[in-house]
Image 1 (spheres, rainbow, N blue to C red):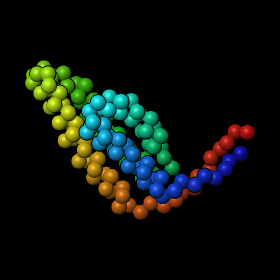
Image 2 (cartoon, rainbow, N blue to C red):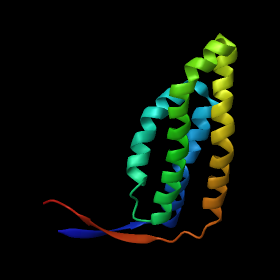
Image 3 (tube, helix red, strand yellow):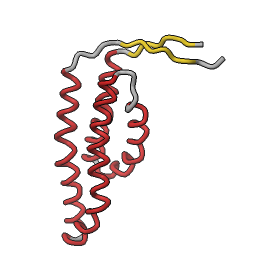
Length: 128
């Protein structure tokens, strides 16, 4: 049996902005960064195949940026910390995250806010 479910325009807009918003919070509060690496996978999986293609596009773009920078830091993080030393190396890595992730995330958030979002109706299969 299928039922129709409405997704409001506000929910679509928030879903499009969610990955970027959480990435900014995780970068600004560094202790949350490792938690966000795990939690981001759930947000990405939830929204990367959203019924509204624009939500999926914003989520995929934000995910590619975040996972790209995180992956690069897996490779280059240790040499940076070794070269600069303890706290300076960690500050440099945090700076790389901040400079490469925050400006594009803010841009995407503002761009999603400017778009005209519409309510959508989807059919959901339920098991009886």
